[in-house]
Length: 386
Image 1 (cartoon, rainbow, N blue to C red):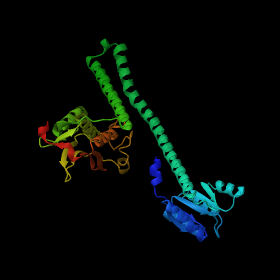
Image 2 (cartoon, one colour):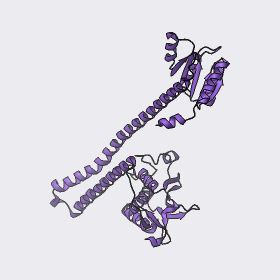
Image 3 (cartoon, rainbow, N blue to C red):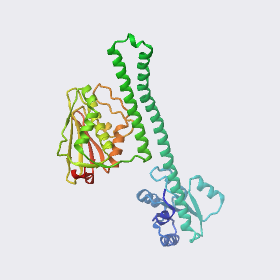
Image 4 (cartoon, rainbow, N blue to C red):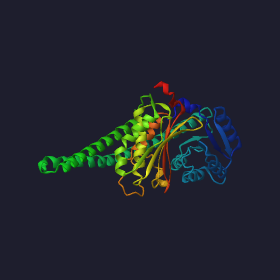
């Protein structure tokens, strides 16, 4: 919301509409002396043309004019969505109730009477402009609140599903072990049940971690703890984290980040989490026997670029535009189930930006996808700092 002092210092553009030249000159002189920018027109048609062309901050509109009078001009302004919210101050020599009532029926914001009190006019205009700004601020705040409410509803719906699925598995398989007679089960079957319980527990923990990270991002409380660490070490940790996933999908993860990789001043766990997320998504969208490559480079500006590339089906353009929206599950042509909360990529980008960097995706259908983490030059440090 604009502060009072800042508001008073703003330069507003006022359109003065009056068929009397002397009245226009006096109004212009009065307002320009108070810091307003003034444009003058003498009739209703010229007023509408000027409003549509210049979009003034407010219109000082005379009622009685030849041709289109002030009421006609006001009616047309309010009927045009492009200009309908411009504040209108009616200027009239009439003080009868009928004119005033009609003005407010046409949603006029304020009115002044002739002869005009010149010392008061600039303050009346600022009052109207300030009220208009407050109205806009309230409207924006209401829209944000509505969006937040819808997001909360969507969030709860997603979380209900994501939490119930692993919990049902944990309860179901543990019930079989407790009440189904473990003694009558084969060792392989017991091992299978325990494995399912373990995997469901890990998935549940991952969901909870995503939720907690999302809360930190939204509240602005997510922080990073910087330490020097080799990029080679980070890439190896991330690849280890997706090892079982890659093996199950029969996807080969190729690490092209070797001993020549730089040392970084970053939050090690956060950067590992980012690259792990990028690798996990690449594996999900890869076919059996495909490769996922991890590599790095430094551009001319000194920015570090860590890339994770796959040769999967690619992401359609309409899906690529919403890849950073929370809860978005991007579906490809592969039949393998995706799973997940749809929070990983937005969280990864938030972590990258906490480091002064960013996250970007490039993809073409049928040609694969490249996810690229960028970190600014100041994140690169000499290895002896380790």
